Length: 268
Length: 289
Image 1 (cartoon, rainbow over the protein chains, first blue to last red):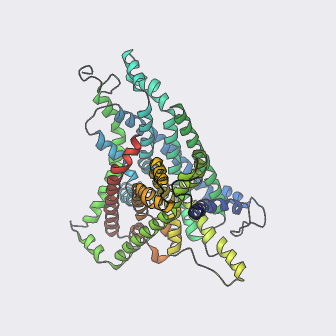
Image 2: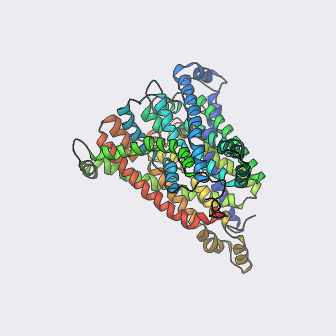
Image 3: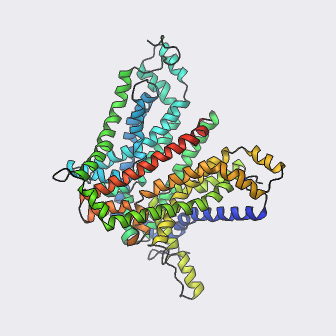
């Protein structure tokens, strides 16, 4: 089976048992939350001794939980749209122009990925308290646009590097306008990488907690901030229902991305 | 113009003005929402009525800051070492699988990567907490006498940390292992080298670039960690990021908060630069293929 660590049975057994311990450690905690969410609404209990949907009822009817969920979905949708509108043309310009200083701009767009998020949280907190943007949806969306830009950038730039420049050249020679080329030739080829980037940005914004914790208050509180304070102060079993829903959503998004990436790889 | 410079410039190139027009909005947003707040943080740390380095001098002599800095290094390095200790065997195990099986296992490794950090924190409390699964089990087995505190202390932070760090470590090492030329191992085997010797002389040395990159990624990620120490650690496990929050919200000392944030920014900047060097030397060759 294996050349990397030889054919010794002892070594093989040791490696596989450590590996399985890790797989279990990475997976089991998140999976165990699922049965807990259908169990006793009074306390966190495993294995659950009763079946009930009470925790889900509490989640969907409690204004604090459901309200923050709706707020998170709104913020994530607005963030994804705004980042796409800003980042896709910028990525296109970086890939198809010879502007001096392109490297510097690209560094600027990738920078949010490299700065510790707490530093950004503090900086935006200082800035927003001067500008009256604290506890506003617009302020949070703006911050999330900055945070998600690198991820859409990476996805779209890689799509552009795989797309066929010759098609654009031909369209241009045949007299198509720049705008027409962009919408008719470039965008259709980028469909998959834009969708992958968008799903990723959506999930990132939906799960983002540190910046949201600094910038939001009671009016604009998002789901992760609500979860954070709930884990910290009360540890209610409703968290199990929220976690189950979020895990299912992440899983669907991840599978969507994997499926789309598989499709592009197969076509290349 | 396009004709003169042969293939490098073609009809598909945008004119500089069009490119500028397309780049301007995002650049403006980034200057306003990224560069400005970072600048404001640096400024706040230096200017408090007058321009001075007092905030940094105070930090350097503050027992709280120094204790938190020591915590941060201890937790980041400890978490990284545990993650390396377990991540390496996982990478070996993955590298040894046939491709189809490997994909299935990789999904298990990647799933936590996609899960919200809050879901993971809650799940870890549910399993390792004082009333969690493991302690319930220990209680039943021992007749209620045994309870091992594994949450809201150093152990809890490390558990949360490695739950977050492991995928990065595994993927980084796996990259090196998959790039390794297996004919080397075949040749060594033919010439009579034993499995242990093959591992020490070939597999391990050739996977070191992946190990180094994985270690640097782990340290860089953990040094700025906020949620995990806040939710899974005790009061004495505060890390630098938590100290920034403490100064901002508890003591309302924005100058100290900013100076702490700048210190963290410099530290992680150095690590990122180092990572860039390591990646530039080893990773690019693999990425270009």
